[in-house]
Length: 205
Image (cartoon, rainbow, N blue to C red; front, side, top):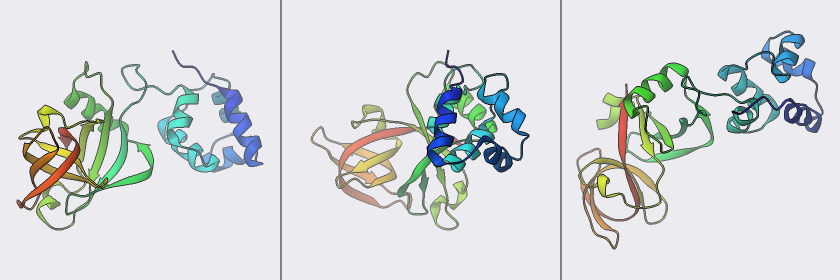
């Protein structure tokens, strides 16, 4: 079980040339509360982890790791918002993945299933117009992959085409050599060379 690594936080404060008192002010907390957090006597919340990451200039995932933050079932938090999907279905990676709100994580866990063992990634649809506008603000869950998964054929999937671009599309057919026919959110069929493809696991409105 991961535990609070208070020394890591102290070192990061020193590296940044700041103090626990200034961090406490940033968090709008009493310094004694932050001190208890770093000593393991008080649980760090997800919102505090996010604010601490911003203050220290480090990834949220690093803060969560050294704070021993766990999800509602006791497992390490593994569902992070990693990308935005625009109105054309193109994925834009976030420079820093961030944790989903706890309410969304709980819905995601129900949608994915408690025994799902693979790393789940989340992407949020941001489409004010076009065919994806009906899903605006929805969160799509998918799995990290390095291959074109057989289960992606015939399914709405997250696809990476040759050149590195990632898109949301339905894979109509795909050959072992990578040639594929994909259908865009607008319903247009296109030929592409797929490097990876993984089906959307769930959509959370």
